[in-house]
Image 1 (cartoon, rainbow, N blue to C red):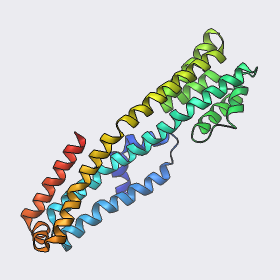
Image 2 (image 1 turned 180 degrees about the vertical axis):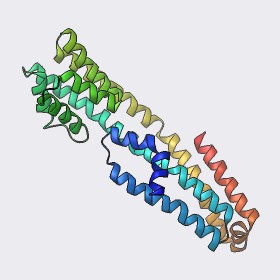
Image 3 (image 1 turned 45 degrees about the vertical axis):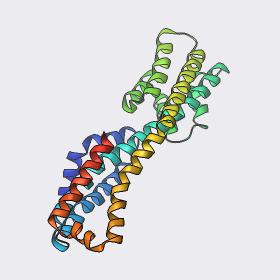
Image 4 (image 1 turned 60 degrees about the vertical axis):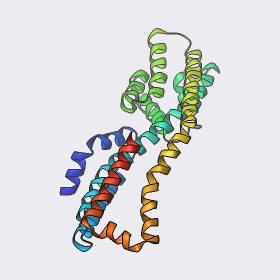
Length: 248
């Protein structure tokens, strides 16, 4: 219970992002407990058993702050997946409206084609509308909760068309082309920077590989590196420099 309270206080924002995007918070609670064990367990193992206090502190700090990056990775991956699915969903809704279906009927039709996780949000809009809530309010609630640019553009186009009139099918078709172009540019950017990211990853894993190779070819030097306070401080300095280089 104490650890759960500490984790909720520390990672409240990430937990809220999980809830906004429909990610399960029950599994998140389990992983945060496992993360607590990974912080505390190795710390006492390195400190009391192996007598490596500097490395124990370094590993505990790294494990503690690594959770933030892991949770942010899951959030970004979910946002990217919804963004990519918005292109096909917007185009499908535009075609349905242009074929003569009303906007609620078009939402129902594309719910049979759009995969998770976007289909859950569309079904929530459909469910709220069937319960008597105005379609505009249902879409606006999902837009504010997700806070994803692609869905915001989609929602605003529908809301403007509902408030001021106009051809919703043509508006959605233009929005789908805009989303498709944004997706193409972002993927091109990722492809153009892939080699640079790969070089950074290789440089980041090279120092640990080099230290292991040193221990293999010269065990005495490896023992000095891991078994003395000066050697452990050198390892800590190397890790800090590697992190600073990757972050830069």
